[in-house]
Image (cartoon, rainbow, N blue to C red; front, top):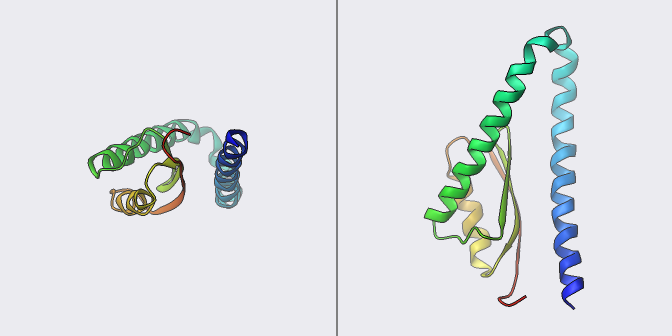
Length: 122
């Protein structure tokens, strides 16, 4: 029984990661075709974008903690203002609360909430 739930959790996390990667590729293809001559200058901006994404993820996690959501089982993935919440919480009400708190963080443009409920002791 535990293995089935573990496989479901792994499967849902995989779906989130794949959908984020697929979503980001559609926006990058248009940008890379119009800015192909600027490729050498973008090396520093890619690093800055990664730092900004990490900072936004940390900002969302802090906001979730302050908002009363237990963040021990939650992964926050940020990319260009879009935030994905993945993992599990113990209370179904915390799923909606986490989404609302994440939407309220400055710099967040959209939230994909893929949180699931995990019963205590599993």
